[in-house]
Length: 131
Image (cartoon, rainbow, N blue to C red; front, side, top):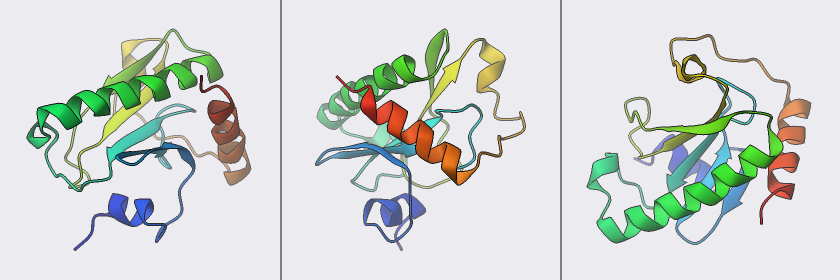
């Protein structure tokens, strides 16, 4: 059975796509900790992050870096934090979160409720800041 992320990649479920290439897909988290919170996933369905082969992992990190740089230019923050948890969806994924301090990355914090219009604004802003 396909993961929810695979369904997003194939267009079976909607997403606020930020970037995509032949191997990776980045989209806004619909339950974000901060505005601009983005998920980056490999298109290949791999459950555990550390099962990704070294070559693909290197490409994954470089793709994620380009997404993080666009977020950094779009959303006021000190940095874009990166975290890998891997328990909620059985498909490896990176969380890129604009942060001011470490508590901004606490998954125990309440998730933001963002309107679809605002999500579209954030999506367009981040996309416009890719180099």
